[in-house]
Image 1 (cartoon, rainbow, N blue to C red):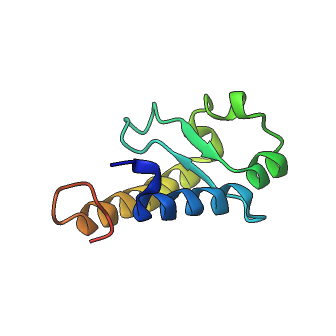
Image 2: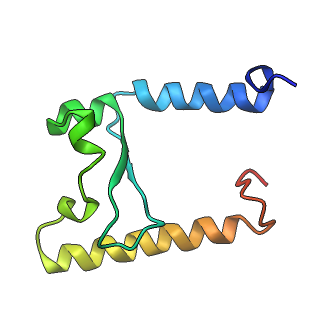
Image 3: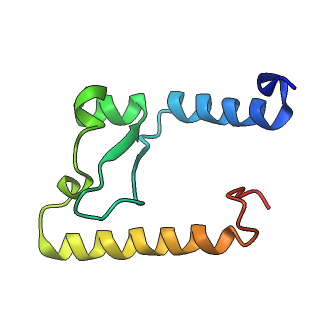
Length: 100
């Protein structure tokens, strides 16, 4: 079977292209690492241009650098924990497929 002709793959590729090309700045970071070691792993064109980053610089940037004060660090961690917990709860089947 050709993975690039699979309807699910096609939809994921369309979603990826839409995220990359939207005017809405989007970024993500690797939340599976220890929070002190996490780095940004994605920023779309709107994000990179809006915040003045080059791709090579951004994907090496520790995500902890996105906050300045200890209060912001705590708020950021609470938000990341909530997103992580929600993602884990959504994957009840344990197969890594978040669509079900």
